[in-house]
Length: 103
Image (tube, rainbow, N blue to C red; front, side, top):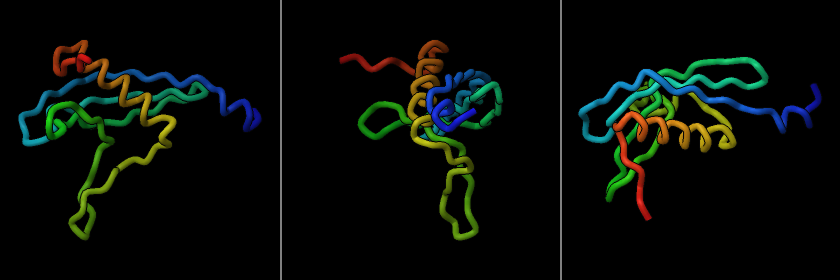
């Protein structure tokens, strides 16, 4: 498969295992399966967070580094992060855990 073929491959997201939380910022964890070119992998613990002033943001799992800072446990290209976040938010709305923002 050439690099050109890879640039146009379909990516599928499957979201499941929603675990609602009661914390200051994180209100739910979900698991996301990503399938690219027929190869699937899971990212466990994707976070749905409250945004100050209202709204929701989706974040990849994090861990505390030895220096005490929080770092992403997984890094994905922005071409995957944005559509994954959209799919997670749609799932959370369908599950009744989040509400769709109205214009």
